[in-house]
Length: 342
Image 1 (cartoon, rainbow, N blue to C red):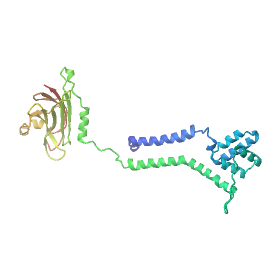
Image 2: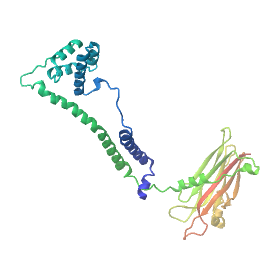
Image 3: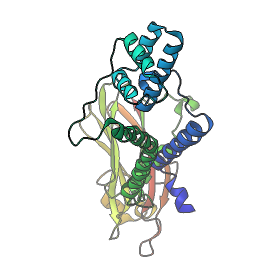
Image 4: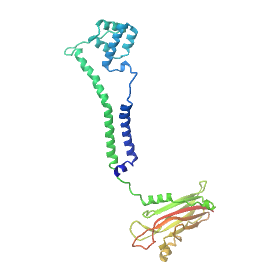
């Protein structure tokens, strides 16, 4: 049951099934059962050939009774283009009609029955009539079978769609990558509302998010003025790792600010607790920038000639590895970068 429910979570499958079910309900239940189509207002020329002959016989009987030539002509012309052939067939097989009635009707409409020549070896017209009458019956059978053929084609198409598209698809979607998890966390993070505390709002704000396993993490952002003028760039990337093997275990991150009006890029290094309190590692990383302890809600300020940036730790968590010191590497880090013009 669960596998069936998962299949119906696919919008394409739901659309195909809904189309087929709707077609069956609309066509068979409603179209044929509740409100079948009723044909009205058809012309004599739309009748099958046998009924055209019967129509012409009734027209002759009516002419015999009223002698109205205009109605006789109109009824004869309504059978075009089969009027001549029907008149000939009636002349050859009058049945209950008197030859005088057929002749009078022919004279009224100005058309005489055509002679039916019999070639050597050819069957008389009387013997061919049953075969000619069978043709409309065959056409009628095909017309009745046509809806079933259409339904059959739709069912086959639905089966083929299932076999070639849905059956070969994986039963579950691929697990999200660490970068995707980090991006989702950034979208769900809460932005700082500086106006609520009476501070001047920044000209722009960015959210950088890291998740362990994203070994190529290096977010950078362009800083533009409200009118679109390029002012500089900022970003954050992995500065140092610890241990060996995959995934890489980041212990420090470089936060940097570039000002187009300044000659240098300002950098600070946000470190894990272990690295921040380890003199040897901390001294090595100080060459990249001022060390800052990573702690939830912690802020650090970077300033250039015309820009000021506040980097705030929105969220963070440490990873665990039995072979490494505690709080030595981060499992997740979300930084908010807010920039003001000085």
